[in-house]
Length: 492
Image 1 (tube, helix red, strand yellow):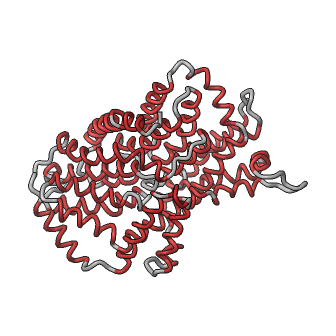
Image 2 (spheres, rainbow, N blue to C red; image 1 turned 90 degrees about the vertical axis):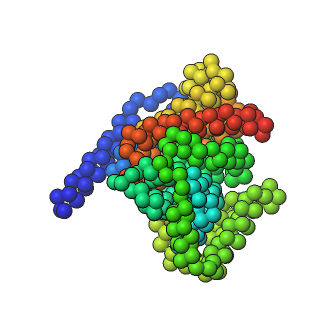
Image 3 (cartoon, rainbow, N blue to C red; image 1 turned 60 degrees about the vertical axis):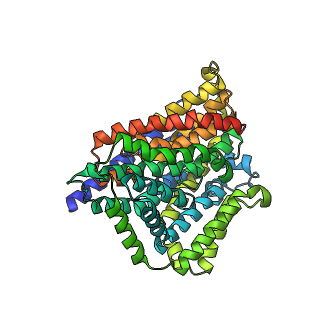
């Protein structure tokens, strides 16, 4: 055991050394013309941090913290602070103040609040109740079980921002138990029902992650980058306005598409439906916390959808929801403080927002835009959007985390699109939705996919094959239907 732990620790420090080496090489490399020292050094640390998300020497939070410490202690943030705020008094170093400003960003707190609400959804049993209710009502056939998963994902999607918690924590155990109720296990007749149910669960999770700003923890990163690089606000209502038509069509057709390319041998699922009804009955009547949660959800949705009328910030509405849950006793303060996922997200997201803003304030983004302008000038705006979107989609093969994929590429792609004259809202929509849908390509793209694949019903080679076919399905829906729909919205 000790030898195993020592090897793991040695591997972590070796990978950390590689990340540091990457940062140092960039830091001391000759600067391109038009970039000052602070901008180039910020890019070096940012690039090394993003690289760490790929090889993973340590979790994201510590790596982002390390990057912030390097930039703060070297006073790299100083010029950025002066541009964003006011020049500090003589002898005062403002790098630490700048390093911390991302932790007060509304996007950071939207994600934290949504994680806290999702904890209440799971602990109260509401998420499981919703999923079992959908199965008990619509799961008469195996295809019906697929649509039940779609319905449950649709209901939970806006409120459980961790697609891993939603897919892996709530839905995957239910789909696995339903498959076993139908006498389908990884070692015994996986294609009888289990393969189809697992594929539905994994791929439907990505659709609902794409449909809502709060559907996946990394989605607000796209909105933040859109505001920073394209000066466009892509808030909760706008995000849903663009996703509702192609998203609902995907939920309607994807279970049927998977039923065609990975047909279950068993068509009648009444045994699983009866099991879901027994499990639902075992939950007993609706509890007080579940009722309050449902009311809070309804009010939050209404406030998010009517933001133009009252002006309440999306994050503020989410925080109001958290406060309501605490003061009504639905959620204990101890559980709020103990929600590791929420505070971990705050650490890495707040730090990355700081770094991203610094790249802009230090002029690196403007320099990059000018540097690539001539290279994309020959493309028309719409053509550039589609080409960039396709490259972005399939580049996911090289990433093992959707948030890391967003952080590594989305800002640069927005700059490229802007240089090509692409309508900004069109480019934002493509990258916002494709940031989630591209997770279909591999079995290691995101937490819930890894969990579903880990159940053992689908071999890796078959997962890749089906994933590629699903990617074509998404492109057909979100380009074939999405583009004309976004034209009607006036986005291009």
